[in-house]
Image (cartoon, rainbow, N blue to C red; front, side, top):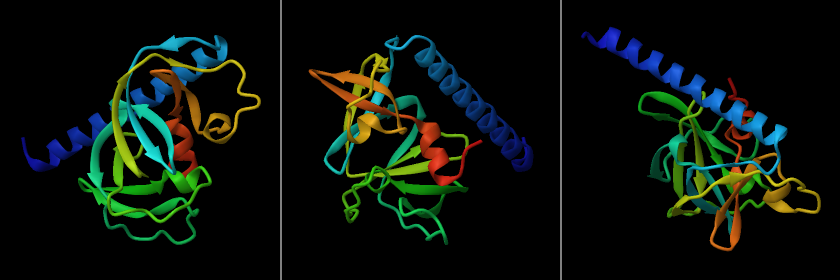
Length: 181
């Protein structure tokens, strides 16, 4: 197969995968809205930013890389670090700590999670803590919660021992950078 048709096939597969991811997210959101407290099993990558933990579905993490060089994007929100090329595709890098209102200088030891979203985005975090197998649950009443627990960035929560870890809503990350489908 020639390079041109192969590239078209890969782009079509990426487009279809992004559509499936978007549909899965929409179905999870509908289920959580229709039946608060519903649990969905899954594997999640646990990260830390600004001394707070969060998780993302492991299936959406394409790769974890060290801090990269990126080009600033004029007029972008403060949490958008810039743009870089990831495997030939333009990708926006966002700082999770700044996004949740806790800006701090990004360490050279930080990690960048490249997420397989509708259009690739990268999330800079202080540390990747590991994987957990846990059901994700949307809490019925987020009233009185603070920080990430009350944020539109949170889709649900995963249990990790005796604590709950916020599950990030990937669509909200995309929306925050203006890259949604």
